[in-house]
Image 1: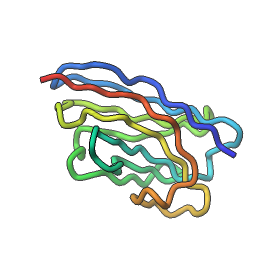
Image 2: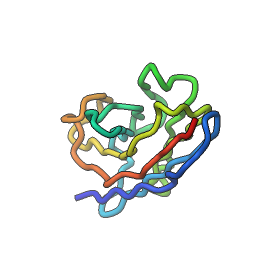
Image 3: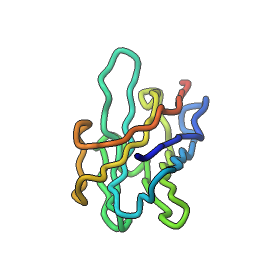
Length: 125
């Protein structure tokens, strides 16, 4: 069992930055693929970014490439999402997810085993 808790969300103006954090407990995540997803009101959950257990391989939603950076610190059981040049369309609840069944990085919701409750990110225009 893995408990994931996100933090760092908030209200920011367009063009601003935020860093989200995801703390894992109950089990080490150093062998897990980790990801961030987001869900805007009235929309389905959407993949944002994922990172391999070794931190060397990452994959991003096209809409956030060059603006968002996913990273991890396995010594602290933490995953991060640095978000720069934020846009109003980035407004959503951002959730952290863990994939422990396999080391392959995936972008589909059903490929992930554990989820946090999410943190709200609101970008004003």
